[in-house]
Image (cartoon, rainbow, N blue to C red):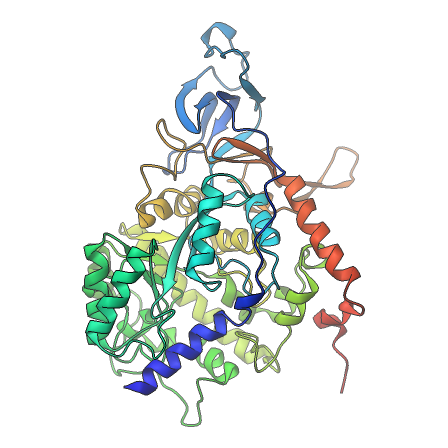
Length: 530
């Protein structure tokens, strides 16, 4: 059994390779507020609960709580001022006529910059510039103590950062791994006492996994799991959900729960898990080994997971590179907003996590495209039957950039069949429910925190408007113009200029470029021929 613990430890280390290099961000110098009273005037509200847009509305915030939401007229007609809520002396007012108001987004899978060489402020500002006001850090790769310090500083608004929830990697800090149920229970007790919000599992022996989940439940904490392939043969998603796991990450363990004629995936006999190309090449053939969509086994697994109130945090975006490497490695934002450190890390390599896209080829891309069709079919139907699906980007790997990658994730959820309103609900209310925070965040609602997004373009019409780089339109003079991007990200009632945050992130990139001669070679276009 020791070898199982060994491989889980190796997987944890792959996420924490730059652990000691991360630095705390500077004290907050951006954002207006908080204010005794903040009033957003005349916005069209997209509330996050699946309801259609409505407006114009006036929203009043006092001391970081939404205290009033009032319809103040009809589209296209002049608002009668006597119907509007009165402002208190000294109130801050935003004229949001013609703008769209949404709840702040929640990234359910947000690693705080383990691969960025110490620029947590770079990561935070990219997230905030894209309307992400809450993140869940799965595995706390910079150490639980460090993450909890960031969480507290964010709560006090000492730094420019989203709300942070810390899900410690199971076994983190233990010298010899977790090798018995009692060791598991003791570790979980200490994790709760240390102030963690939950646990991120990669897998474990069944008796150890069961003991840890039961102990975790005693403290009212939640859990997530990346069902690593070194453990999934004995613990697939359905089995861990029955034990009390609350959230799964990625897809690992779900196709295995749907197997009809096998118990392990069809590994080639020369497969090696530590070979990233083996791992991700064969993963692209996994969903077609599962039960056919809408078959009895497929339906039975889906219905039981829904009955267990199980959350699927799909993280479509990191693996999307495998469908089209040329496109994914050349996305328009990499030029200005991706640091040389990340560009170098993203290059294909045998020792960079996920960077298996060398000699990838047409056939592998086609397999991954088919893999996505089957995966997305399950996810869309899961949503249709009442299952909870959330948005998590898992940025920092495989040409998946913080903030930008989250909007890619929303587009991929849309591709799977969700209505744009259902996409927004996955990014807001359903994520808040999965975190147990639906009474505090997730919708624009009286009594909740003032975490909101204001933008000038309608994101339901085009999710690309949510990118910091926006999208292209043609104006009346037949000129190509760039529109979109979030105008204001409001967190705890503090108003952040999202474009200014994006400029701050670009400045960090520019400074690193200046200090990195020859950084251009880290673009895949510039890889030299042999």
